[in-house]
Image (cartoon, rainbow, N blue to C red):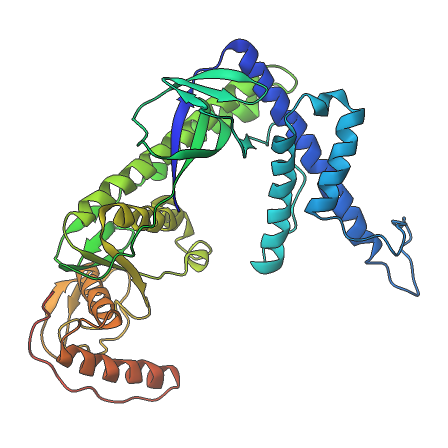
Length: 418
């Protein structure tokens, strides 16, 4: 199976907009009720046997099972028979809301994410139709269950042979959008290493440096619009509470945030297509994005959006038949790509790589990209024999250095070939 998601802007009527907002609010209430039911069960099991809190305790029978997706869906069926507002919403939409909560708990258990929190008014921004009727798409129209036909701007054609599996209606600052998941019953062969290799190194001064010596600038969309964003946020804080003016000012802030995200994502896609045209194999660093988001340069790292760029690059490589793989990012800026010797740490102010062993000189980011390319070729088994030998020695050096020891590496006078 092969799935692709297409996003189109909706053009709903005024009545349909009101209906969308009512559905979002009811989904939010179902989400909060289901979360409260699970939270109460957990708190009832946290009381000690020989002591109780001074305030209150949750008294739930000891044989009551933990609420899960199946039990809460059964409770939802009972609630829809008693509450007309819930019955007006399609049952699958409400079930997907409970499934969303279930995924949040699974992420908490498996990925060490935080405990799910209640959603305040207006924070629920999307709902999902997991099933659509027969032929839900027409030219410029989509038929949604219990809502009817809604116009949308079909900015591009959808390839034939696919089946619409689900539709997600999303509310953004610029309007309403629909995300269609199309499925084709085909098997996509895995892309094998072929063609010219290309290593990339991501940074802040230059967004991407390639092993061929090209440097791509960093657009810094948040930094360029930060002054305007600060001005708009000040206007929001100065508005009188209870009036419509804070909502109007907050709408301008949301529009600017969406513009920043669109600029960043558009640049990522353009750069990904540019890189795919240059090589048949692309190797990138496997960065610790969570650690970088908490470091000294967290603001600039988040502004660059390296995580989103790697996802976009992997998708672009899959669509264009380019092999993509991540390699180890340790000490890529401390190794000479010519002789593979350890050159020592560099400060952020040092932008030129100059090896004292072999005399190889180039841009610091380009040298790191060349090291990434060498490691990528070794990972796919296409590196020259001399490079494999040097990498074996290099791995032993890294291990010895981590243990506080040192070992020498033979010199290599030849320049790296990519």
